[in-house]
Length: 459
Image (cartoon, rainbow, N blue to C red; front, side, top):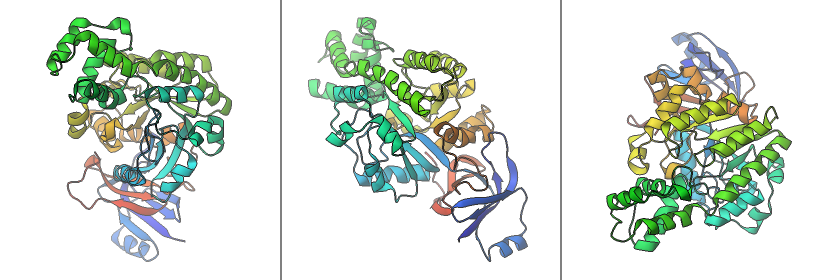
């Protein structure tokens, strides 16, 4: 049986409290054999190397492998809760490669309608791919309202109960930026509608500004602000082809059809989660927050575990994001902080929402971190860990637990998320002087990624 060791690294066991300034992690086969809190001498290293593969962890921090509980496009099955046509297997693998380079060892694909046989097509990838299920009639109805082009008869026939029995680790994502007027509308559907109507191209932040002027943060047609809509049309160069009423109608026709069904699916998913005692991942945004709060109050102390995804969503105001997160935490909901806008690249492509991340991180209400998809420009979890620690919003053990032990606990993954004897030997090694940078990733005790490029970062 293969043996390995990571020596002389700072070690975060994953309990949210402990940091061992220097330690060794011993691996036997695909499992953690033990953790020893001391520095090994050169002679001890040489002796150890006679019968183990040794990784020198000097200058590194060893964490449990990162668990990304909210990602899309990692499986060649229906894409997003709107059930867009699947990414190719090559694209799914490329996405998984990116997540691996960002330190992820387990990923939960929350597109919602993918089947186990589709996930099996990428099961040889080092990243451990798990599924969430949204196979609920009203979730299908919401997907059909915006497209549903990726759904086959097999996808439509499947049920959430069946998928949970076949290994899905959660319900979700229930609702989405495509079906609840969020980011998916901004970077995909509204621009498509504008292009079809005018032949013009708009950026995601321009579509978002038009949406907010036309429907407000809670997608209420009564919130239409004609003057604001006119200003946005002028600013984005569409005033010569659309008047405010035309723009309002175009946006409403894109955004509103799936909303009622998507919100109704929240109640359906909550009932399934209650019956199975499993996790349910809800799209948390201004249009859906009241429904999540109502579900949380109704479920109370049931065994269901609610995750409020990307609680730093830009449909909120910054203040509402923080206040909603506080209320959710008081009700026992797990509050997810997404990595939106952490890199310059994502800000250029998708808009700058860094103030949302900072406000929620500083509030202390978030207890999970994930990437979501962000139009394909998602940022890695290590960037979030690094920013939270540098700003003093969390200790390194606390920030690390938000993407390791906390996630494992929510999803009921008892074999990972901590560096304890008998658990999976999945480790993420970050540079101690730059926690955003991934040095090595081990999956099942084997090196699956090694950063040999001096300029590589986890964005």
